[in-house]
Image (cartoon, rainbow, N blue to C red; front, side, top):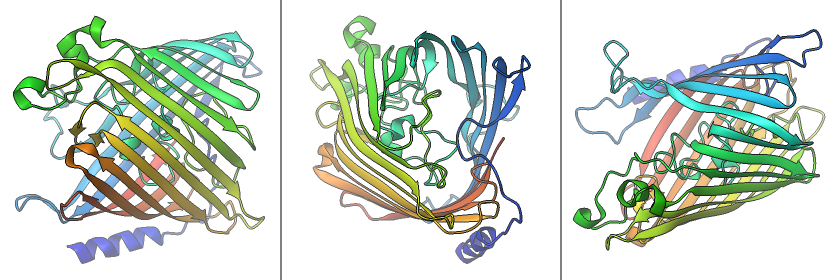
Length: 403
């Protein structure tokens, strides 16, 4: 089966498309003009990502080859003028044979709002908004768009609070965003979620638990405060929407230096029953630029992130400790209206205080852009080792379409 799967992936990556032109930035989609000059409009964007994965490290009764819908999303936003905007984003994630519902209802139904916010202009280049939003702090990758990632998926630990204080990396709250010259900012004050992935009991289980609001109450647990600031040294990126581009495929020359933070007062409860603050911060740098007139380009990113979830906190992907992550991709030379190839590498190393050891992950992959990010195939192999445990390998093929 493994050999058959490898042959399948190689065949997919050799598919050639004679015509492949498309917008590589997020602000695509179908635009409905509500007046003649298009200043009043409604825009629609839909996308899907479909996975086939081969994993040797599964129980004896589990299949090593599995298929899933990684993401199925629909987003729309509307402006009647530049003074206000409303955005709606809904969909599902990681739908597979193990969590589908017989008739699409009940607890297994995964369709939900990812974003729903309204925004108002308060001054030139400065806006405020409210709702379920994605104007996050910490790092560029904690604000990553899922439409144009360079790696097959986002670095998991960069989405540092999914399911702990938020709803799938979104909080309900208020935010401000804008720019002063080349410096862009986003800042938010949010509610913390009462229901979290961390259902443990700090006293009974003897561990630090991220459930401050559930255990201590909304007054003592406090609000979530977060922000991210990036300085655009070369071409200026758009901050019209919060979703950061993963790779521009050489259409821009970007060099950004960023820094961000996340603070949740008494977000966790420790083994003595007392609350403790959650503090996460990061500094990062992003570079994306064409190399020559032949169409070649590079994309590079690096981040240092400090994670403090309380004393010896550890739950799945989350752990108190530090993280260094980076990736590098090279877009091969070729005509922009033909199929494009982009091999890449990624590497992460992080400390886990709870086990006094490290976790490391190496990723090797390639993208095949048939119509820019609108139609692409990705192949990635990751190898991961956590502490003294053995290494685990995972091979994933992704087919993606967005309109």
